[in-house]
Image (cartoon, rainbow, N blue to C red; front, side, top):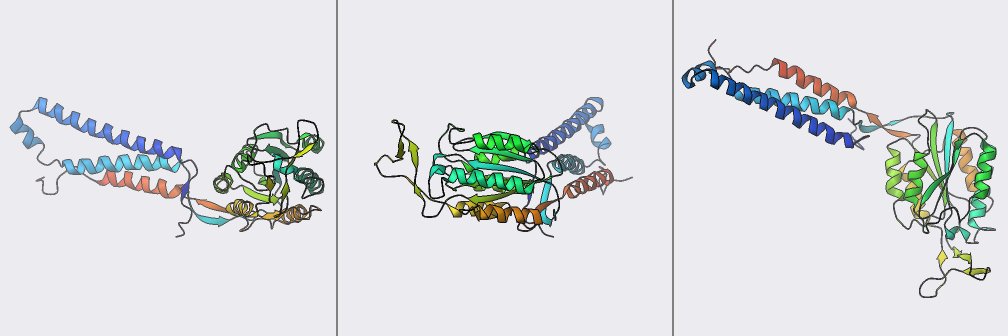
Length: 337
């Protein structure tokens, strides 16, 4: 049996399962002690020994353990145990796409004309126009992430929001890909549509949380594609200075801050969910190639690999324990009939 990627969809319920099992066991042992005390108050010590001569305390303990463990397993089944991998072909399914757009200052670098941010926004708009179906949403992120446009089929409203999104949309500086992925995941509706996240960024994950968050999304069946905006050689970041003129951003030592495309991080994020990493390209050719792959249903590596539900194993084990508990007698083997 394939036991790869063993996990629980709702791991917090495991604590409830343990507590339920312990509570049942404690209650059963308390009831047992109360029965023995009741007998002790009813009969003399010598008579009590004769009355309980055929009774096995060890078997009673075994029955209590079986009941407690069975209860714990039943609750654990609700935690969504998963292991093994199944491949689900989703070609032709309607896609809900959430774009996560980097609006940090590094997106103002001019290694893509006129800037990385402007080129990324054009690529998103072209993608939506040519795709033409399904819901689209927009998340803007820098050091924080916020949903700018909820999932909608009103493309005009989406385009207006996209046009208004710039480096002033997020006040917290930096680049946190983990928050971007998390915010994008929260934007999806609970429906049967295929769910895709497309991140457009230069890949400088200053908080280093993007890969771990992407791994969590894989278990929920979401696919994250990453689009690298910029060039590996990079360029200086130009911002509007106090005088109103363009100025080059400098570090504490007075050196120009150069922002470069981080392909390694973006590739790892995409790989974590079976998605793809592409370079945007000056003419947006990378984004167009990704759109065609999504349309053909060939964009996912592994075509939608998901953990296989295994609740029936836990339920079966619990029922087996309950049956065995009912078959075990508390009478000693060597007791006289």
